[in-house]
Amino acid sequence: QVDLVESGGALVQAGASLRLSCTASEGTLIIYTIGWFRQNSGKEREFVANISPSGGDTSYAESVMGRFTISRDLAENTVDLQMVSLKPEDTAVYYCATSRRPTYGARSGDRYNDWGQGTPVTVTS
Image 1 (cartoon, rainbow, N blue to C red):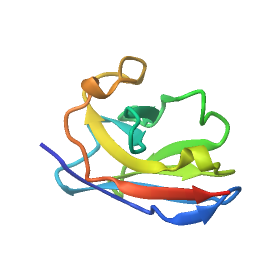
Image 2: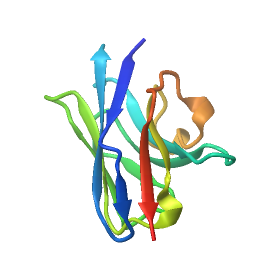
Image 3: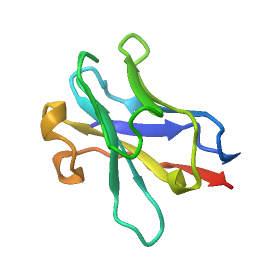
Image 4: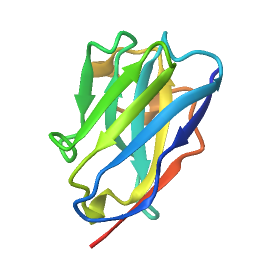
C-alpha cells in the first residue's frame, strides 16, 4: 500500500497555469502506473492522464490533451501534472492514484488501488 499526497491546487483565473504534484508519504511510486483523475461535485470521476513506471508512456483524456502534461521524477518519487490554459470546466478536485496495469489499460478508476485525498483546483472565468 502507498500513501499518496497531492498538492498544488489553487484558485486561479481562466488561462492560468498550475502544477500539481503527487508524492508518497509512505512507499514508492516507482513500480506503479500513476494516474490523475478529477471529480467535480455532482459529476462522475474523470480520467485525466497517466504515466508508466518508467515515464516512457503517457496517455491523456481528450479534454486535456495539448494543455496538460504528466511527468515523473524517479529520484524525487513524485509525479507532476502541469496544467496550462486552464478553463472553468477544469474546476474539480484532482486525485492521483496507483495502478499495476499499463497506461493503455488504466484509464478507468477501477484499475487503480491507492488514492490520495485530492487537491482542489478552481478556475474562474
